[in-house]
Amino acid sequence: MRAEIQNTVEQIEKSLKLLAQRLNWDTAQHRLEEFNARVEDPNLWDDPAAAQKLMRDRQLLVDAIETYSSIKQDLSDNVEMIELGEMEGDKEVITDAETAIKALAEKAAKKELEALLDEEADGNDTFLEINSGAGGTESCDWANMLARMYVRWAEQHGYEVELQSETPGEEAGIKSAAYKISGPNAYGWLKSESGVHRLVRISPFDSAAKRHTSFCSVWVYPVVDDNIEIEVNPSEIRIDTYRSSGAGGQHVNTTDSAVRITHMPTGIVVTSSEKSQHQNRDIAMKALKSRLYQMELDRRNAAINAAHEAKGDAGWGNQIRSYVLQPYQMVKDLRTGHETSDTKGVLDGDLDPFMAATLAMNVSGKSRADARAD
Image (cartoon, rainbow, N blue to C red; front, side, top):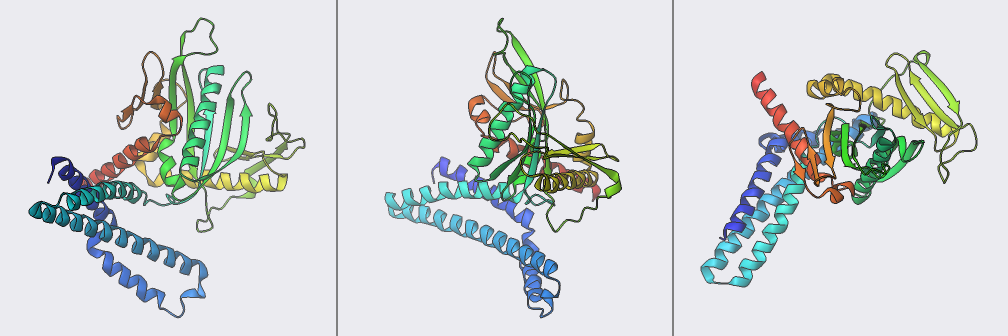
């Protein structure tokens, strides 16, 4: 077997190992049998919500088992075909099997990443907020670039993107924007983007063409679905209505329909200014519940909680990623060390490698923590 194909086979085997680990393969069949027994219970649908959750969990397990089994079997079959082709000198059989193994490696790598998204709320839709930080007009322009980057990423993955609110900058760009991004594992993928993003470039607003550094914060929260109960005390919130303002275009309202909700115990403020006042109240309340739910998730996860507590202002010393456009081209994640010189690709939405690196780092970190606990 050629060295290149042998390396590809080893990559697939590593992916299979991770899939088996995340699936807990040794007990998977037993757990499926337990699910099947519960599905046959004639009283199952007495509690529709519990029944639906059971059916979803069962299907997730079925899909995971089938994925692992099919990749493992396909790998074995194609390795055998290469060995047979080499024994018989059949180059066509070898070529076909090698092509199949390369395609299988892409499938295995994708499933490996999806397997990392198994935490609570990973499968939910998400809210994504962008706020300009230190840098004035520069940071407002940078916020606009980030908004474009995330919209591009979402569209490339077939996700639905809905603008919830937007505040324009005084001279250019935006001061802030909030989006709802809907699709499978939207929160699971985007949660690693929470933090401060730093841009270094020659300013298009500086006649002296000097380099400028700009900062923006990006915060991601899961959309709270009907399976998650979040209680909000009406006496602890203040609801204000106001007239939406903007530079013009389809997102401008002409009535006082925009809604701002302030959660007084935490200081959380959420807004919505895209629809009718009734719809905006509903959207803003869902966003508030999502923020409160995120706080609860943070309390359960010490590492994430520490990161959020230490996030500080959108400025020096708090960034998670640097985007350098001058004097050289580089985007580098300061948590994982992952970097690329393809700055244009990243700003056009090619974020998967950065997300994957962070997910993998979080998993390995948890594994070490579990080992210390044991």
